[in-house]
Amino acid sequence: MNTAIAHTVAVNVTVHKPLPPASARPTPGGPWTRQAVLNLLAQPFMQLVQQAHAVHRQHFPQGDIELASLLSVKTGGCPEDCSYCPQSVHYDTGVDASKLMAPDAVLAAAAAAQAAGATRFCMGAAWRSPTDRDVAKVAELVAGVRALGLQTCATLGMLAPAQAQTLADAGLDYYNHNLDSAPDFYPQIIGTRVYDERLQTLQNVRDAGVKVCCGGIIGMGETREQRAGLIAELASLQPAPESVPINNLVRVPGTPLADSPPVDPFEMVRMVAAARITMPAARVRLSAGRRELGDGIQALCFMAGANSIFYGDKLLVTGNPDVEADRALLQRLDLPVTGTAA
Ligand code: SAM
Ligand code: DTB
Ligand code: SF4
Image (tube, rainbow, N blue to C red; front, side):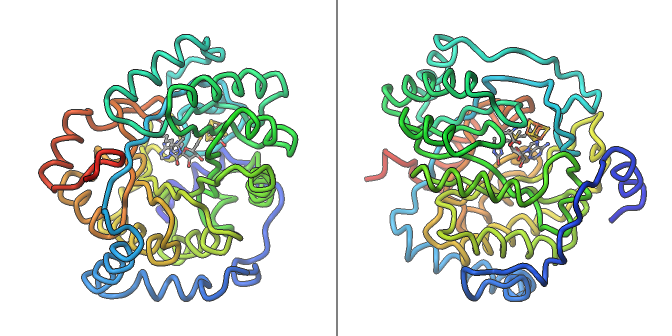
């Protein structure tokens, strides 16, 4: 890791409980130890892509790409100190805090996303953990979005079991809660929430019968070994997540990671390939940071097994490729969109 970043992170993050070294953590899902994933990632690039593509074709013979739209229903003012995040109160990023959006505005955005071709709608809130009142309000949003005929997803921070159940009863299909990084790198990035709390929320979501969307970020100064550690943790969840977002860090001015050196874009392709091979039935989403990847790298990611994108001009608070550019790219690559495949 770049020493300047190591310094900035150390200043901004309070590390609470050190986790055991990754090698000591169980990988109950079977063969996907950190070393096994590292062996995958370290293969000759073309060999890795070829292997991942074969797994992809076997599990997704239609080769369709899911379009998932994202809306920040409650922006900014978050008490957490995630070093990558423009919505944390700890950093001066120019993002103003706002209240939870009104239902009619959320439903209008969902209907517009659907009209543009999205089949999944994800609502994000900058909370550490919602109150029961917050959850009741989001449950109303979930029911409304589902009534439009969209798949629903929410990402609201840590959830208690009863809160997960409330959202499940409202018709929530997926809950997004990322592990973000390997357990041994994580404390350098986040000090206000420990890894095991993330695992607990994932379990609460599972127990409520909601499908899990869980992934991470690359480009935060982690090593390839640590990227392997993230994939091993994800693939060892029982069962594996149904949806796996792989984010390329969006370096937002004002955050401690603003000046992180960009990671080699081929590393993003390798991560997608490793996610595809280790979690063959999952929707692997090429998530934040696509604008910096360019069309060629994105095409390689689709080849390596990415079959979902965030679709819409905005992610939560940062930009995303234009809808027209995305549709054109998928057409140029002859990739069918989910729900329209022949
Ligand atoms: N506040 C909730 C939480 O963190 O649990 C939900 C929203 S949070 C923005 C969802 C995820 O977005 C994070 O876990 C992280 O993986 C991703 N994310 C946030 N900022 C990012 C950035 N600058 N670049 C890439 N991914 C980012
Ligand atoms: C995920 O893995 N990526 C999305 C979603 N889950 C909620 C968020 C990306 C955020 C990128 C920076 C921003 O716009 O705030
Ligand atoms: Fe808050 Fe989520 Fe951002 Fe962390 S990633 S600061 S929890 S909004």
